[in-house]
Image (tube, rainbow, N blue to C red; front, side, top):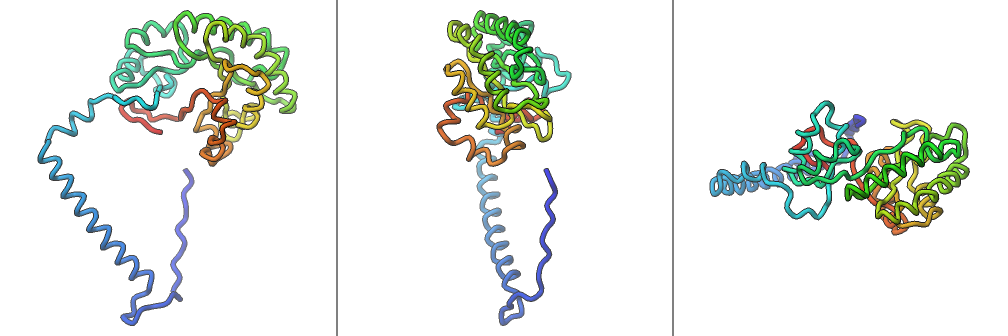
Length: 273
């Protein structure tokens, strides 16, 4: 986050009869209201704590119960934490699953009632925007679809690849050609293929699927409910900004299967939106 410099105060603003500037007077009034509010809040908090001294401790251990938002974590965000520990704590706080872990990890997830929310496939830079990559990428995607369906899990990931001088229009066409060769299998097995939107400004230079509008056009070109976008809030805030405005239109929301903040908290007990 960039530091913001505070504007210097001017000395020529109007003053009251008592010699106080309007800004200082207003600041004093606001400060008094804030102090009163803080005092009232503190009293209310003390009353609550006195009535139920163990409530805070109970809430800390209480898992998510409403589950209006289905949340998951990415294993790579937690460094060298063993999968067993990550799965155990994820289940304890009410998360739904873990992203980007393959079949070797799935028995551990199932042990704790978790879902493999997004099965990994091919790499990021060498993707579906080039026909010469199709054979390699599509074979990995097919295997992932079959394994994911057999496990009863919902999604597999894919990537556009980098531009490397290719136009976005040509890359979109090539991605659609490739995806149409595997989306039929995804339909048959009840698995959704998701292409991730990543920023090319900071983390994944030259990546092609770096704008929501491009991704939506690809979804239209493929024309299947079993191909959608993985809308990563972190990446799209970096790339496009104003994610509420770009995410809100129906043409985008109907094309998106998952929203997540990739740069999640590093502590298991912390959940960020």
